[in-house]
Every structure is written in structure tokens, then in C-alpha cells.
Length: 308
Image (cartoon, rainbow, N blue to C red):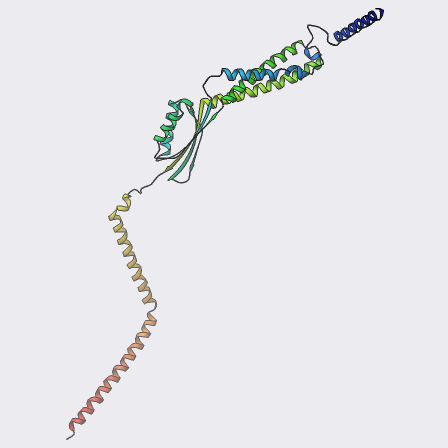
């Protein structure tokens, strides 16, 4: 019995020592924060985050409506007769449908060839109506391409992540209010800054998805090809004026010809005189020689006639 009693007493003493050491290590004070415990700050702040986020994703997925979030993009290439007139009509359609132009550029290759690019945003419910209206303004539709991206699951996931991050943010703010040590405040501030940065990034992505799913993006390529017909020029049909011009040109040509001929003759007159004298002398000699031959022929004929 004494041995059993001794063992029992030793056990009681050991239990008291263990309880005292535990109470010193984890003091039960209302003003202490979790960062005073041996659990690291990150574990204290994010220990249940993954569980919370997983549960919220499941809850959001189960409670989401049948409405989908789809981002629509379209590219339309058309051929028109007048670019400026077509752009004005597109702007009027956008005004009626609460749309707007994001970007506009014009490339003028020549007077007959103009190419323009329009990037517009249009409410999703007016998306197909707008495309049909633009097509009616064209002479020919060269290309029409429509794409859609379903972002419903991504948006639901972002909502769940935002809720879980907000819970962690509130928890960290509570820790900061109850923290007494500088080391704990630094750790909480660092974790809080990281969480708030993630929250802002999630909110930005959600706004982007909301905006692009509510307003469809349409890029329009406009090609203008004109056929220019030459106009009649009245000046070119002035017969009387052209007749006078031709008469004056002809008269000037004659005057120029005869003036040059006169200059040529007078300027070369000495040469012409000498040549003329030479030619006259040659002709005189030839004529005299022929006359002499004629006389001799006539004399010979006379002698022949006188013979019996």
C-alpha cells in the first residue's frame, strides 16, 4: 500500500509541474494576440484561408444564376463608296446605342484608295444589331469574324477569393489593434499589405471582366475605292481661241522661214554671184559650141546638094 501511495503522490506532483509550465508558456490574457504564441504570424493569419476560400467557391458555384458572363469581340471589314459619310453614320448609330469610339486611324494611299480603322465599344445587347447596321452601310462585306470568351467561372472564383481575402484582412486588422509588441506589429503590417494588394488586384480584374462583358469590342476596317471620271473642261472646248492660236503659230512659222531664207540668200550672195557667173559662162560656151556644130552641118548639107 505504501508503494502504491508513493507512486500516486509522484504522479500528482508531476501533473502539477506540467500544468504550471503550460500556463507560463501560454498565458491566458484577454489582451494578448495570437502573434504572442509560438505559431508564426503567417500561419496565424492564413491557417484557415484555403479552407474558407474553398468553401466560398463551392457556395458561389452552387448559388450562381444561369446568366453567363461572355466577352464578345468582332472584326468587320467592309468596302464603301465614301469613307467620311460612312464614319458619320457609324457615329450616329453608336450615339443611338450608347456606344463610343475607342480608336480611329486613317491611311490615305491615294485619292482613289483610303483605308480606315475604327475600334468601338457597344453594349452587349446591341452587339449583333450594330454589326447588321454597319453592314447595310457597305457596298461589300469582305470579312466578318466574331469570337466569344466565357468568363463566368473566373468571375465566380474571383468573388470567392475576394471574400476570403476580406476575411483575412479583417482578422489582421483585429490583430493589429490588440498587438503590444513591435515585432508583432511589423509582421501584421507586412501581411496586411500583401493581403490588401491581392484584394486590389482581384477587384481590378473583376472590374475588367464586368466592363468587357457588358460592352463588346468591335474593330471595323473601312476600305474606300473611288472611280474618278474626268470632267469636261470648257477651256479645252474653246474652238475660236484655239483657231486664233493655230493661225498665229502658222504665221509665225512662215515669217520665221522666209526671214531665215532671206538671211541665207543675202548672206551667201557673193558665193551665189560667182557660181552664177561660172554657170552662165559654161552655158555660153556650150551654146556657142552647139551653134558652131549646127553651122558646119548646114554647110556640109549644102555641098552635098550642089554636086551633080
